[in-house]
Amino acid sequence: MVLASLTPLSAVARAGARSSAFQSRRFLAQVVNAKGHDQSTPSSYKVVVVGGGSAGLSVASTLAETLGNKAVAVVEPSDVHYYQPLWTFVGSGLKTFDESKMAMSEVMPEKAQWIKDSVASFNPKQNTVVLANGESISYDYLVVAAGIQTNWGKIKNLPETLGKNGVTSNYSAQSVQKTDEFIKAFKGGNALFTMPSTPIKCAGAPQKIMYLAEEQWRKAGIRSQTNINYFTGLGKIFAIDKYANELLKICKKRDLNINFFTDLTEIKPESKEAVFNILAGEAKGTTLTLPYEFLHVTPPMGAPEFIKSSPLSNADGWVDVDKETLRHNKFSNVYSLGDCSSLPTSKTAAAITAQSAVLKNNLLGDIYGDNQVAKYDGYTSCPLVTGSESLILAEFSGYTGQPQETFPFDQSKERFSTYLLTKEVIPEIYWKSMVKGTWDGPAKYRKLFGVV
Ligand code: FAD
Ligand code: UQ1
Image 1 (tube, rainbow, N blue to C red):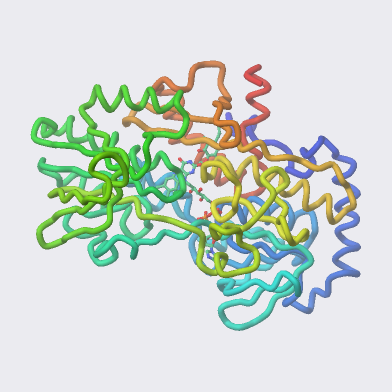
Image 2: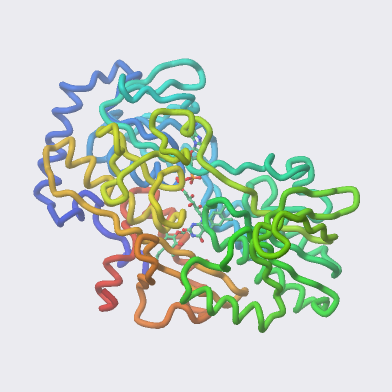
């Protein structure tokens, strides 16, 4: 099937097509294990990976396979691993919640040691991390992949309102199914969708669910009694003009009102009102209060607190890494990728496919004395679902701001093919290949299709 042809060889073998180097790395790995790593001392590892999400698993799988049994530890507190990109489909009833989750024990690499706890703090000068239970774990190399923090409490009354009386969010495992329930129960009135001014994961997701809800309300015959408003704290609907222009046309055609520089600050559950701060223009500094019957909230997000307060963070709280090599700017045996990293591109699982290949190449290069440095080019992607049969597949570099598309057609146009790819094929790639460390993203297909 399609997947077989999309699944590459191991990332290590792929890195520079150095399969003989891979063989010798495996041999060396046994030496590293036998001499450098005492298997009976579980508090010391060749590599410690913090976080067993999309980024952590895609890196840990390859490293554990290459470095051998128990050379790699993954510190991860959760029993469940979520494929969060599916939550747009779950929130609109197009997929079930169960399809978005897997027991952590099922996806954890067999040869890695799963430490089921949280990291509380980092001591990079001592090469140790301290767990929530107080235990110290030491490492030769550290990979930080702890994701982004959703700050529900920064919207007044949101934590206690979420999942009740029409207030929902696809950004939480606890409320995503409520989105589907509330869309289907909606009988008309004001429907509000919000996007904060902070960095978030998948910057397209706050509007994808608006398109899917609008389609359902249109099909249910209640569209004429429904006002749909999108409030973004930012000044654009999408960062890249090629896609933003098409999205604005869709909004106009479907009577979706887009409000820029408006940031949700408070929910008044008794009166069912949402309060916004106006961030720019003549009304700057004032507030706007609107009644709602349906409210989809994307909460403000930021760097996880335990990273922010650590020596690993930059001024904004993200793990401070070089944007090309993914190596920490101060501590050379520390790497980071994914949503918690400082990499200046849009935070998505798609971006991680390219980041993890670079990180693994460079970290294994450190271990084996191989200095063919790989560089990340800022690739990221946002599959913008615009209906239950249509999608705009935005693919671009956050570093150049230019499209970086895989297929030999204009991906800014709505298509059924890219919808099916995103809904049916990419989830298969994720479970069968990405979490196993063997999916390096679509770069090679871009070359195959001659798109460069
Ligand atoms: P995560 O996958 O969030 O994993 C972080 C892990 O770290 C978690 O398992 C967590 O338990 C663990 N952790 C946290 N704190 C600690 C600690 N102190 N110690 C140890 N472990 C810790 N991306 C796309 O590419 N395409 C899409 O269409 C898309 N749509 C999305 C739609 C929605 C609604 C959402 C919510 C996200 C979407 N994304 C999409 C974004 C994508 O899911 C994230 O970018 C991706 O999961 C980031 O991976 P990560 O490993 O950095 O973080
Ligand atoms: C991708 O590789 C990926 O990771 C598995 C995603 O995460 C959910 C994506 O959303 C996208 C778009 C890609 C890119 C893959 C192709 C085939 C364009």
